Amino acid sequence: MTLTPTLAALLTVFAIWMIACIWTGFRARVLWFFIVLATGLALNATWMVFWLDARVFEPHALLAQLSVLFYAVGGFGLGWLAGRVAKRWRESRVDPPSS
Image 1: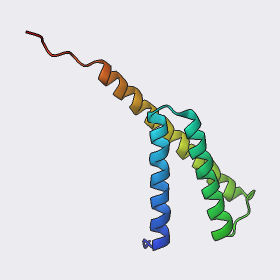
Image 2: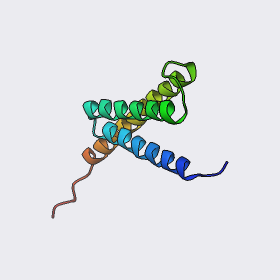
Image 3: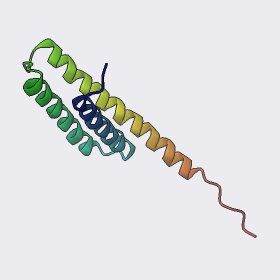
């Protein structure tokens, strides 16, 4: 498989979108997560309809949209877990000994 400019652009957009999902989970921003999710679903639907000539309700397109949903929820969950670990790490700091 060759990395074409189109594929590189798609992978870049996907990586930025996943980072946004993880960031919303890390900060526990649920409203922002739904905005990022809606943006990802819209971009994926636009790509499939206009560039891949797919119909919105055909099984493959629906499965791709479901995959976007699972990626987003997984990214949010990973970020949420990392945020909780970071918070507990900061809370468990030991104060330096006072002389």
